[in-house]
Length: 315
Image (cartoon, rainbow, N blue to C red; front, side, top):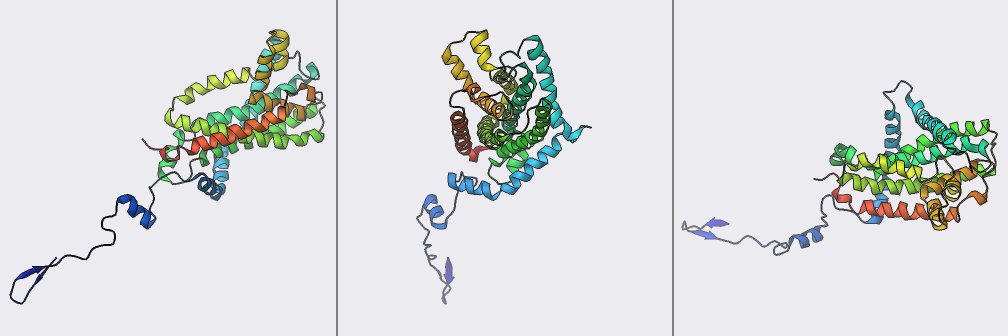
């Protein structure tokens, strides 16, 4: 800085020193409360942000559900028609041609309720996983344009699949009544079973969302993985009967197969809804397994997804 004296000479003076002189960028950021743009918040803060956006999550899930079949003439009826058509195919192939009705708890007359319940429950998990894989990679425009907790997307898609299942449960109730399985106190168990499965599905969807955001080709592989999981879960036949009577599998293999989370949630739902399905037909520690899978995959999947929060939509 310069000043002119009366004699025409130019005198210079130093500008006043700033109190920030000499501070490193990190020290400046700490002094003024600045944070890195897009940085991952703490886990507690992340949960708080998600709760603050609960209305967006619910509205987004409803909008996706409405738009899913908007171009089809039958519209929302496909939510129920698709799993019912799958059940019809499985009934012919596995129930009639391959003898899948053998070993069904309560006898062969229970096979249709047994099958339809299994198809609906497994479809809930299957569609949650498949939509979770694409929840980030399929919504990059939204992810890059707006700032919001990215977990909102897989959670929304899991809620969408829950709403779709609830429509299917109405049809399942009609089928059960048609086969003389009338409502009882055990039907109230449907609520905690669905709650545990929703937590499990959401955690699994978050795991797949993170993996799918880095490897979009995973979406092409998952249908084969899910189909294999379906065959290994006893959707179309009694898993214990097939392993014990048809294949003479060792006991450890039977126990491991019955502890499969998809099989656990299906068995509990069948126990709640179908007469003749008793406690003896459930795998050991079924309720503990259902709760354990929900906690491990639900919480673990949430933490796994959160750890990559700042990387979604970049690159």
